[in-house]
Image (cartoon, rainbow, N blue to C red; front, side):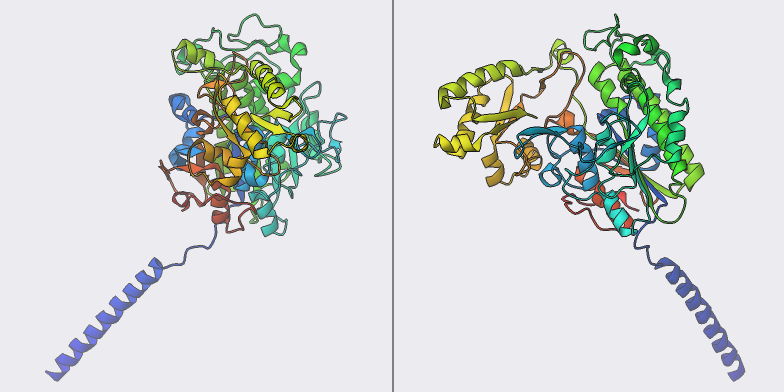
Length: 556
């Protein structure tokens, strides 16, 4: 009996030991520590110039599986993503995406702006203290020196002791320079004109790398000197308006704004290689060069994270020229979809599927052509700025005895001469308010705010919130003008942007790849959230002026 009990006890202990060991093994597997940071071999930032969010949904059935659909279906889609400042234009847009903040902090308040210290207009990326590299023109005299904060790309360089490479590529100089920050290895942009070359600035290097020279000497760009016809049969483009309409521009020498566009016959009268910017071929050229950079710089070739910033600019040129509802815009996005698929396929092969991280967004959206909206009985119109200036000059002469109290009017901002007002013994705050009230009475102007209001209040929503985020105390003007909803100061053909209205602020934001969840959100996200989200993923410091917040739903 005792022997039987002993055997039973031994068996019980064995079972308990085995069971405990199994549980411990299982528990140990369950509580494996999560990595403190993700280490993709390469981060690819993609900014599509002038991309509205609804271009994703509107052209969805026309897209292939390897471009936009791959990002949406396998990545994370922020459906309610917005710019939280104005002006919504290219320079501020690229700066805000990569700095994690707004013009109030990073200082890029427009593509161009009136500089209150020098009394001159300045360009966001212009810098004549550097020389052009790859051209004899002054098109390479650029640097990021007017951007006051670091970028996520700067932080990556600092974090990796500058071993991680950072390269920027865009047709537009500002689309290449601003994203890669102050410490980049290189930024390259397209000269156009008679050469069709990719160039840079002595801010980055003294001579072009051999791979860039080889690309410029190839016939890669010349191959796009060909007619532009639709990628698919034009009758399938049911997502756009009529091909022949009164809402699109004409290139010099064109008698019709319809397909096909005979690029070779328009070549010499429309800027030669520069003409390609206003076709989808400009995006394909950008893709060709970006893939050459991937190979030439061996990006993603080791375990130290590199960063490739690509900006597709042709979408903006096409949108400005033909308008949001055009067949040309649709065709440009279908071709861009193919270019994206080409990029992702190459990344899979060279860097490795699952070894890289991508985000895609835009630097601003765009309004539908107001003349089209008006013909469709939708409230819209055109702000007559010449008429406004004439009437306003009469007011200034009557009120102050001189028009010299105003130094400049640009980016819907009025810059007053503080010294003249002081000499006239006129209080600055009173002058701002009087002028704001006068401008508010003009047709086409919907709202007006003063610098005093921007200084004294903290706005949390609506148009004033957006204006305040775009207001830089040292650089912005004294009076901020907001046109009526649906109103622009522009030609009656083509679309534009720049306002604080939702048609200019709502843009896509897609994340894909290593460290990214699969899914979507309709919670509001804002452009300055992109950089801190990447910083949290990579485990690096936030850019120095960050005001955005990491989007927790995105991160795996």
